[in-house]
Length: 293
Length: 174
Figure 1: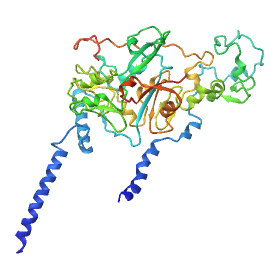
Figure 2 (figure 1 turned 90 degrees about the vertical axis):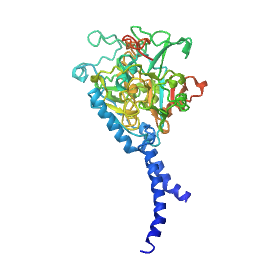
Figure 3 (figure 1 turned 135 degrees about the horizontal axis):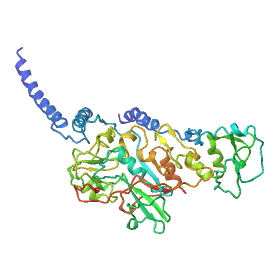
């Protein structure tokens, strides 16, 4: 007991310091720290997602499931599109709109199908998205659908001042709609016109909402944020093909794991003539175009 | 310590990789396909043909099946080059081997070997299902009418609305 006060004194100083440091670290990591979905711990993410679901229920009157599936280990997604097969029917455009809860009015399309002249080849200066014949394909034309190219060296993520957009471990470039401030730097940086801005609250009828969503994917967006293709993250992280792949009547769209030697995507890269758009910009897209014939 | 760490964690790190990748051999198995796209009531062929005599003479059909227009190497081919004369509910290969309608891709693959190879690899034609698991293929005949195999033109979905001023109800935004 004689040594008591002395011991308690020495220990308590250390304990106090350690306790204070621990508390500070915990504060930074949880409540006061970054709330960006990029880096929140799993339990906090779950509570954030529960809040989102509650808000959607109140505002939209829909029971929306907001998934939090993380990137699968050993997976890097890539996409391939057969230019020699695409007929330009735009089925993919509208399947994407329905799957990913894009605004119907004002209209947002993540996929833009460009009609090009066979004489000129892949030439953006002579491409148009507004073709409207009775039947496609038109004589002398071929079609190049363009959406996010999921670049490995993505210019869009570098310019974001708030860290609201980044590349996930499976290679998908995503946006945190809560941290996006709508500055649209990323839209200026993207050489493919793949990012789209919600100038108003998206016109999305409740009856048409796809209720299977993902927190950095197709969950309904507020106005004033940027959105883009996420390779249907809510589907592909659960093993399914993206909506555009399944709907394509010509079978021109291919999707798979770049790290799996048995995947379609690897077969295409190893056996077909493959190109990427605007290769000279060194964006290193994971969206490949190829000619099967 | 570092070696022990590697020994401990390497197998763990590799496990998911091998779990996520379907073996390359899977492509060699008979792919799963939906039933062939027959016209209603046309199959089984033996329903009518069982009692009919086989006329192996090449001719234009006038009494029945006259709606079928052959635009598939029609100078060199006719019905009985693919449809079997004895087993009316089957097709046959060039070697005479019977091929059921549900495996018609083997018949098509005799001439279109390059497409057949791509189809087996999942590169030609539409696939649905799971990118890393169970996939459903379509038969050649689901997209190409075997008698007129050229892919039919489609009516396109409406073009996008050109960009308009924000707030306008007419336009689309970028």
